[in-house]
Structures are given as structure tokens and as C-alpha cells.
Image (cartoon, rainbow, N blue to C red; front, side):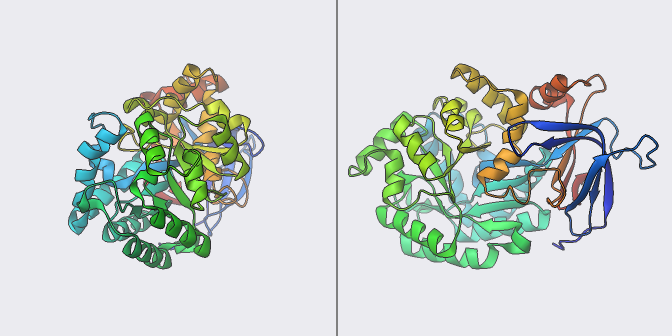
Length: 417
């Protein structure tokens, strides 16, 4: 997709994430100037005699949402209530993911997946593909056509699942290298390849070490699951008896570091949290899927007190929605249950700039400020939502009254008017 767009000016109520803390500056009537390169050229208060019409009356504008954890091949099994994690994988997920060797099937789901992201204002996502290289190629192509931003990984699995979804270490790593050569950095970094071990149980030590070596050699991001479910923890300890704990499994195979993004982190010890912080790892908080599978509640305070980078993840299909705003509401509930009060405003920050930081994209996206790429969404608010507290409550909790009305990436309109 061409990187350039026609210069334009947005006028409206704008929420600007603060770079120094999880909060927003609210500009009640602002002009946002977008250049031909798709970057924001200026942000200023609209003068009293401004001749520029309001771009979308009744809407509030903010950066596009960043989903830090979502599974493309689980799009059609979203909401399949077949038990806790390991049983759910065996019953609902692995049979569905086996279908993605069919290119036509993968292509149809890829279109549905991209449409769902756009419908809910997600402009950037960290995506797990299936274990099939062809399906991963299909997904990259669909994201490219849609104009979306994201990082995508071939899901690495060479044990612990049906033969139909396994791929041995050598061909899997070769496929990763080929996909990275084709897509990593595509369109000036709009798309990236991400090394993606499903989780430790699905990978032999050789595959984990090979994944780490590939990520190091090509400077690729890494994503995987960590400490989601008690049965998973017990199985992981049995499979890796020489590692001190679950985080140590990844450390022992070279997978900790600032490029690494870990989803869930529900049952970590203090020592494990300290190790993640010491290696500057990022966290994807997925409360909706944790509730749905009965996995537990991630102690958000443990991550925030250690200043870990935390984004929000839908984790479709254990997550029951593509909406990061619904996930923010689930995160609010989870925080209350874990004794960590957090405001809707802060959670929406984690769904935007916080997610960009988790993906190490916060130098490009996640802010409404000069020099940043114009990934923007408009949410249409009812007219009675006026004051600041009501605004953030409506965005996080009243989704039926505040639909996503327009979506832009690099200043190009991808959805709405």
C-alpha cells in the first residue's frame, strides 16, 4: 500500500496520551494536521473563528487501539466454551487450526479477521498465525491489503499437539526465516515478523533454542504465552525439570529480553516478576480470556510496580471479543478482584500508547503529537457525555453508546467517514 496520503486537517475533541504517565490530555476543540507522509504535522487548539468544520460531530478522537495478543486462526471458534486451557486447546483450537492448510479457508478467515479488527478500532495487533507457513503468508497479504499495522508470527509447535498442527523444528525455523525475509519491515515497518513459540509445552528444547537464535540473529520480536493456567504450570514443570520455574524455562533457552512479549502471567511468583523486569520484557494482559477459561486474575499491580511495559490483549478466541474497550472493562473488573484499583482512563492508555510501548512502537504510534504516524480512531459519543470522567467511562463501559465510527492508519481512512 502506498505510504503517502492527501494532506488533511482533523477538527474535533481529541484525547492525547501522555508520554510520562497513564493518562490523557483532553483537547476539547483541536486541529490535527496530517501531512502527505501520513504523519501528524501539528496539533493545536482551534481558534474561536476557525473555518475548518468539525470532522465528525459528536465524536472523540484518540490513537488507534493496539491489541498485543490475538490468534488469527481462532477467529471462528471465538467463544467456544469447551473447558480450561489444555482441554480447550485439544477440543476447540487444534482441530480448527488444522484447517488452515487449506489456502482458501485461510484466506476467507483472514478477511474476517481484518474486518473485525477494523470494526473495533484496532489499528495494530500482535498476531499468532497457525503453524502453517502458507496460512501465515495469506494473513500477511490480507493485513497488507487492509492497510493495517502489526507483527505476525508462524506459531511454532513440534510436540504436545495432534500431528496435523505440528511442524518440526528445522522446517519451521526455515519457514520463519523466509517469512521474515518477505515481510519483516514491509511498507516502512507497517508489518513485521515475530518469532512465536506457542508456549513451552508445544516446543522441544531444540525449537526454543532455535527460535531464540533466529530472533537474535535477525533482531526480531518474540511473543509467547506464560503462566496462564495451573495445569499448564504443572505440565511445564514436568517437561522442563532442570529449569527453576516457568520464566526460567524461557531464560534457559535464550528467550528473555526487551524484544520479548509474554501473554497472561497469571500465576507468577515475585521472583519471576523480578526476572521479567530485570530483562525489560513486556506483558500482554488478557483478562477476558482469563475469565472465560477460568485461568485466574493477573496481579496487575505486580507488573506496574516494577514499571513493566503492559499492553492489553483480546486473546481471541479464548477472548470473547475483538474490542480492546471490552478488554479494558474486563481489566477494570480484574483489578478490583486483585485489590488493584485502576481508572478507565489508565486502562484506555494501556490499550493505546501502553500497547505501542509493549510492541516497542511508541516512537511511531500511540500518540497524537507531531512526528507520530496518524493511526487514529473516532468513537461516536452520545451528546450528554460532556465531562472528563463521563467521557472515559463511556469509552470503557458504554460501548453500545460509543461505537467506533472511523479508522485511519498513517492518515488513510480504512473505515468510516
